[in-house]
Image (cartoon, rainbow, N blue to C red):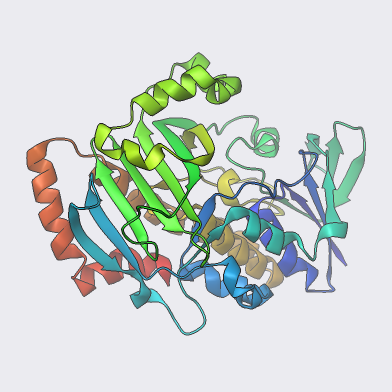
Amino acid sequence: MKKIGIIGAGISGLYIANLFKKNPKYQVSIFDKKDSLNLNEGYGVQLSTNCVKFLNEIGFNKLEKNEKFYPEKINFYSKKDQDKICELDISEFNSNDSKYTTLKRSTLINFLKKDLEDLIKTNYSVSKIDQEQEKIKLTFENKETHECDYLIISDGVFSKSRNLVSNKQIQPKYNDTLAIRGMMPPKNIIDKKNILLFLGSNFHHVIYPVSPSGDLNLIAIMKYKLSTEEQKNNSLFSDKSFIQKILKNIPQENKEFFNNLKELKIFPVFVSNNFFEVKNKNIHLIGDAFFAFPPSFAQGASQSIEGAHELFASIENNSNAHFFKNRVNKTKMVNKRSKLNQFAFHLSNPLTVYFRNIFLKKLVKNKMFLESYLGKIYR
C-alpha cells in the first residue's frame, strides 16, 4: 500500500484525496495549517465543463439541484447594464452530464470533504520536508512526523511547503490589482440567470448566480498599486478606513452594485510568473501552489481540479514523470488568456474601447475562434 501525504485542504487537495481514497492501493493523509476548514464564506466559484466531468467521477452530479446553478450565457456590458455589448453562449460547450456550473465555494468544499473527515488533520503546519531518503519525511511545527511515498503540495499561492522544497526559488508576484468580493441581493439585477460582465477603465466586475434561490456573487478586479510593505500587511485589507478608500475608487457608474454587499472582502491578487519542478519525482505541486492565474478567465478552481485529476492518473499509470511537462503546457495556455482578458476588460482609451467592443461582437459569433480560445480549455 502506497502512502499519500497531501499538504493543504483546499479544492485541489481535497479533490485528489477523493480519487486516492476510492482506490484501496493508497492510504491518504491530509494536513492543513488552519484549525478548521472555512465553510461559512458564501462567495462563488465558476466551474467550466473541463472540470465538472472530473467532479462527476466522485458524485458531483448527485449534489442537490438547489446547491448549484447552470448559467448559459456571459453578457458583456460597457459600464452600465443598459449598455450591453454582446452575449456569449457558454452552453455550447456543455455535454449532457457536464455543464458550466456556478455555486458557493463553501458548498464545493463541503462536498469534497464529506467522505474525508477522518483523513484531515488540522493545525498541522509543516516545518521540514526530508526528501533524501527512500520515504519522504514530513516534520510539523507540533514536532510530529509523518512518512509517505508520494507528497502532494496544494497549500496555495504562498505555499510554505513549496518554499521548503525549492529553497524559496519561486515567489508569487503582486498583480497590481485588488479583488473586491461579496454577495449581493438579486433586486435590481437585469438578468439573474446568467453571468454579467461589466467592463471599465482599469476596473471590471462580474455578477453571477450561485444557486437557483437567487443568491448572487460579485467579484471586481481593480488596478491598484501597493507598496511592498502594504502587500505584506494582511491586516490592512480588513482595516475599515482602507476598505472605504478602495470603495471610493470604484467608478461612479458601478457604485450602485456595491451598496448592499454582504460578506465584503478586499484582498490583493498575487500570481505566479514561473514554474518549479521538484527534483524528487514523487513530490508534486497542484492548484495555486503549482501556478496561480490572474482571475480574469475564471479558471482557478477548474484548473486546480483538472491538474489534480491529471496527477492522479499519472501516478496510477506510473507515468508521473510526464505530469509536469503536460501541466505546464496547459497552464501557459490558460495564463495567456487570463492576461489577455484582463488587458481587454480594463481598456480606458475611448477609441480602443470602441474597437474592442466591435471585435467582441464579432468574436462571440465566430465558432472557429470560440473553439480555439475557449474549446481548448473547456473541453
